[in-house]
Image (cartoon, rainbow, N blue to C red):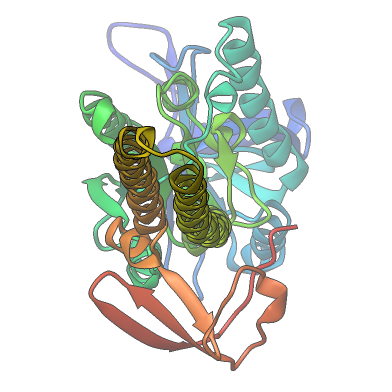
Length: 445
């Protein structure tokens, strides 16, 4: 080591290379070969086939202030060994925004300076961190008393008015609408656009929910849907504020965010979680199919009962008409016989007596005629009432109300087990009919 004395001080000074060598010696003597370091990835840069350069940061617990920041490198050979394994186990890409546990060594080069070199990555730490964060959110929602509020809401019997929260360009939204529009039911849907991945998921979806809440009376339920994608795209749904909005929303919320195995916080607080957007559509259609089959069955019962009642009343009316005619005829015959007998046995009084009986006969005929007219009038009123009942149960009227009737070989279908793939059916609508082929059958079990 060469020492130089300045004119004004006795403090020695060194060449830069000598100072760097001194630092390297101290690092080698005072530090371990490797350390496990917890940090958040703030930046990851790598070109295919080259080394990976990352920025590591540490924030306060509330995330408001930066406590530390440093750079690190993952040599290409180490990257190809540890990063794919990390992504396979965690199901998320090695990208900014996630917390990691890295095994690092300190490298100091006289030219390139101090560098953290990543030797290994512990995927179990990242998985545990994600689970810990989710559990904290669920515990807070439970402590707030809102965790199960949405699940406790009554589900609408006819969920036809559907508010959709999704991205207009999302494939999942297109699949959902295609299935809804192909159904025989008159769904009314409206898209409330939202960003479904990235940093703006929370604020965007909350804004859409608040807009729907202002129109609460116009909707039966809300669906939040997106297509498939990387698991890391779901990070935006792991939010306390978003979960709190969903849990306390005044309408039932269904989720279908495109991942069958992975659940997010909003899946756990929503009224019902379905695995994909098309599964959400199928669920709604299945509910309406069940209601339609129930209405069809009831209308058939009403029609059959009304027809049987009408036949019984017609039979009673015919019997009443026959009885009235027979009674009138017998009364006239009896009166004539009595009149003849009186005429034979009574002399001068016969004419007076005959006159009395003529009056009585006319009175009886009048009473019989009036009674017959009253019975006929009452029976006619009953027939009119029965015709109205039959009209109310007319299948065409049921179709006019917006429902449909599915026929196979001319017979109504009320049981999905009576259908097979490939069967051709006719769907009767208000203003026509549709011929269709069965592609898939979902049993309500």
